[in-house]
Structures are given as C-alpha cells and as structure tokens.
Length: 263
Ligand SMILES: [Zn+2]
Image 1 (cartoon, rainbow, N blue to C red):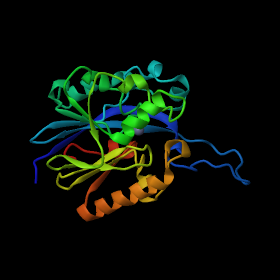
Image 2: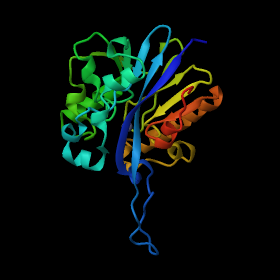
Image 3: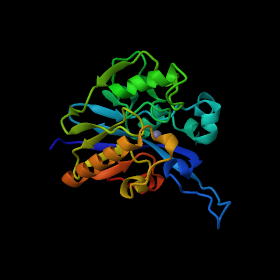
Image 4: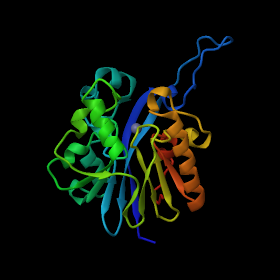
C-alpha cells in the first residue's frame, strides 16, 4: 500500500436553509401550517492528499471575497460568512504547506464554493484535474442563461493547466477518481488507499443523512436525481468492499468531529 497522508483544511462555514441539503426538512402541514425554518452552518473543506508521487490538493474552496464576488441572490441564500478569514494560502500554511508545494489540484466540481481558489494557480504549470462533463457544463452555465447559477466564470475561466478526466482513472498509486454524476454532471469523488481507506463522497452527499438514509438534497442542488441515486449506490458498494470511511460534502458535525490522527 502506498504511504499516503491526508490532511483536512477547514475552509469555514456557509449559512443556509437546511432544506437545500435535506429535502423536505421543513414542510408546512395541516396541523403545523407555519413551521420554523432551520438556518444551519454548512462546512467547507479541502484536502491535502500527500502521496509519495505527488502532493495533491482536493478542491480550492470559496473565493475570499465571496460576499461581494458571488452573485447577490446566491450569497443571500448561501452566505459564506467567514470566507475572508480563509484564504487558501493561509489555510494551507496552517497545515504546513505552501501553494508551491501543490503538485496537482483535483476539482471535484466547479461550483463557487469549490473552485474559488483556482486563481492561485493561474499562469502556473500545476495541472488542474476536472471531469470532462463538469468543464463542459461549467462553461455552458457561465456563458449562457441555461445551466446553473452556481458557476462563477471568473473562478475557472482563467489561464489554467486543465487536465480533463474523461471517465474514471487512477490519479497516482492509491488515489482512484470516481465519477459521481447527480449533484452536477461531472462531479468527482475518490477512493484513497489510506488505512482504513478514505472514500471521498463530497457533494454527492452534503450531509451524512443524504448518504445513510438516501435523503435527497433539495431539487435545486440535484442536476439529475436518478443519476444521484445511482451514484449513491455505487459509493455504498465501494464503501462496503473496501471498509472505507466516507467523507461528506458539507457536514459540519463530521468535520468538527475529526481529530488529529484522522484518517
Ligand atoms: Zn459544495
């Protein structure tokens, strides 16, 4: 087994209605026609996957100026309240790394809370891995009124050394990329062969309940719900076969419960 070390970077909190992550959390009913909504924190994290071959950064988080840089209606709904305290270079430094130490970046997808730090790699020869379907859909969304509002073109429409993943592949020994369409067309997860193995579900499952209880995310966060269900079963199969630990996309309880010797 490859000698792989995984460090988690806590990149702050988005505040948003819980219905986005867990569909039907709050539903008006005959006996309770005006229920209280739950406004909850969503964790934003990145990973440094340190392997003998390469030091890999998994996602780049939100742009530090999210409050002014994201479209107003989007920030009003998904407020990354402490993005300005979480510059990527600072959060990497706290974990003992510099931007220059990163040999490759994997973008699980190109939503604005995942691709906002790509500008650190502009004009460099650091390869940026992204799935073909994601890159296509991000540009389609950014350059037309179709697609999704969650792509901010200035996050990714830059001088970057894109490496397109067409299906699935091993990135380095011990890191296998998995295509998990559902939340977006080209979202990537990964199986990392640590001991025990780490299964990066990411935004396929925002919270643990999406994964364990097959609770869908809200409709606005599901590009294709049928594909989402298929990707979930695929992940569960990988989890079972490898006895893996699963890392969810925005689960604050999970992120805050991770201790130093994790995973
Ligand atoms: Zn996300």
